[in-house]
Amino acid sequence: MPIHDAATPLAAVQQSIARAATLAQREPGDVTLIAVSKTQEPAAILPLLEVGQRHFGENRVQEAQGKWPALRETYPDTVLHLIGQLQSNKAEDAVALFDVIHVVDRPSLVTALGAAMTKLNKRPPCFVQVNIGNEPQKGGCAIADLPALLAAARAAGLPVAGLMAIPPADTEPAPYFALLAKLARDHDLTGLSMGMSSDYETAVTIGATYVRVGTALFGARA
Image (tube, rainbow, N blue to C red; front, side, top):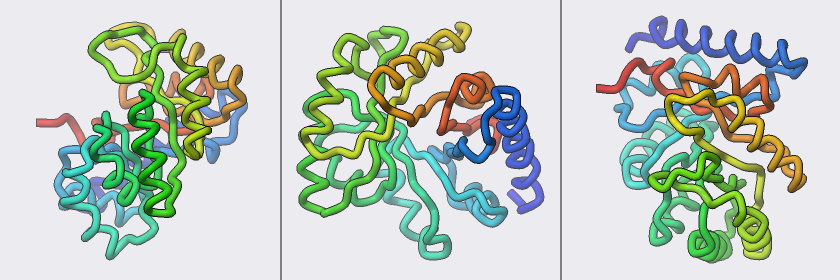
């Protein structure tokens, strides 16, 4: 992807974020755009790096390990976000590689991440993932379990930055985003990781501080 081809969709997404933020009387700079680079080759990621995008999201620890160390040699200020489900046995690898972890969803993972952070003396900000639509196939803790999981995360030394959720597909996402925002307020959290290519503008109007956008930047996946 040539540089100018990357700049156009990036600018379009940035403008949409700014428009949605302004509509909600928010500062556009309060919203961080995460370019979801999962399954993308370095050749597709480099043009976005070259035009200034610095926040990227990956789903799998192993895939990220294969491509980001080399990319970061040239762009050391890149911020890597883990946005896919994390196995407890990969916690140490995740803490070593990623700068933000969006998928804390169960007590066993809290324990593993706490131990890894202590061992590596590195404490990346974490988001607790909520299964906001109560969907059995999705990661995330049940809403009823959120207070206990937050307490466990804080007790384990995880820096809890906020909440993350993915609304059910093919439904109006706004009520789910609003519920996540309310849960965050109830627990004195300011970070909201919500919104993807199809609904990030709605998420921004409801308070998203991080939006995770892949298709709108890279095109449809094969």
